[in-house]
Structure formats: C-alpha cells, structure tokens
Image 1 (tube, helix red, strand yellow):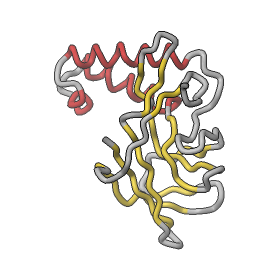
Image 2 (tube, one colour; image 1 turned 30 degrees about the vertical axis):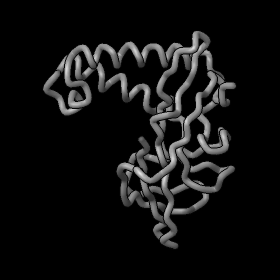
Image 3 (cartoon, one colour; image 1 turned 135 degrees about the horizontal axis):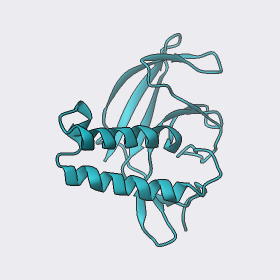
Length: 161
C-alpha cells in the first residue's frame, strides 16, 4: 500500500508528490525486517520532492506517541494502538529500529536516488525551500494506482543484496 502527499509551487503551479511505501524495509544482520520511517523531502540531486528516510525526525515523534498512549489511553494519539499490547509491541519494534540505526553514520537518504543531499519538508501547509521556491501542501491520501517499490536497505542506507 502506498500513500501520497501532494505539493504545488505557489508561483508556477507545478505539482509535486511524495509517495510513502509500506514495502520498503531495513534488514538487520539477523535477517529481521524493520519498517523504514519515511517523509517527504526535497532531493537536491533529483531536483524534486521525493520520499526519503526520516529516522532523525520521526523516531522521537513515534516514541512520544507510544509513551503517551501507554500513559493516557484516551489521548488522541492512542487511536493508533487499539490495545495496550499494541502500544507495547510498537515500543519494542521502535527499540529494535533504534538499535539497528544506532550504528549508522550516514544521513537520511532519498529513496529514489539514495543521495543524502536532502532538505526536509516542514510539517506546515506553506513553506520555502533553500532554492527560493515556495511550496504549498495541497493534498494527501491513498495511492492505489501507484506501483509500489519493494526493497530492503542495509544500515548504511544502500539496497541489501
């Protein structure tokens, strides 16, 4: 299953979309697979908005959501975890992912060209890029017609063989 976020250039009207995929995973030394945290970014090499690794931003946010759901099951973040067991499983998965990434020295990478020359897209409706462009988030949803990439990444962010 793939999800998309759509953006448009506020001057030219040019459209961009980033597609997050559920079939991109990390593979550890034991052969276990872990979900790759993903977020939209501007890839300098690709010259467009892409789907990129987001472990430096999403992992702390995910940890806060899990811990809040464990402490306050009535919180708005708790909807992701229907039961306490779900939240505990999510915390264990997050800990495995953090352990896996703790040895990584490279920065997050573009999931199109694997460059680490990225500009993170802020979680705002309108924002500027270093190249002077002003973009606006204009939609998101399920991308049922997008062909979803399926691959596994090593700790250094390259495709596993």
